Length: 114
Image 1 (cartoon, rainbow, N blue to C red):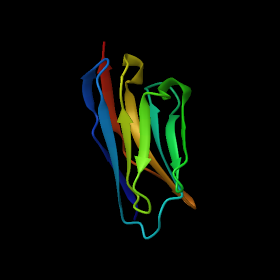
Image 2: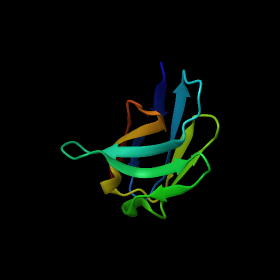
Image 3: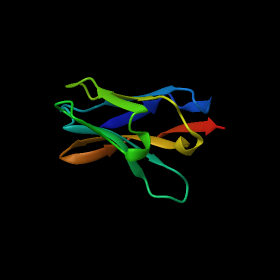
């Protein structure tokens, strides 16, 4: 059974940084794509950043220039470096991986105070 486990969330002040990490357990394959999503209560889960197996990245407009996604391919680990955090970045952040099927972690909470 494949498990994704996020870590690194917490409470920070606006302008500070956090690094989220995603560890994977149980897979015998490498994810083609890995990503970070976030969700605020009452709203849809949204894509934050995605990275392919070749290292190509794409970012949501609100985080472009502040967040950096990376991965250690072919290992199924990923990080999200978040700089210049804003209160609107407050959300539950999920790690996602894709190889034939989609896999999700349980999420790690990021709270940014003003």
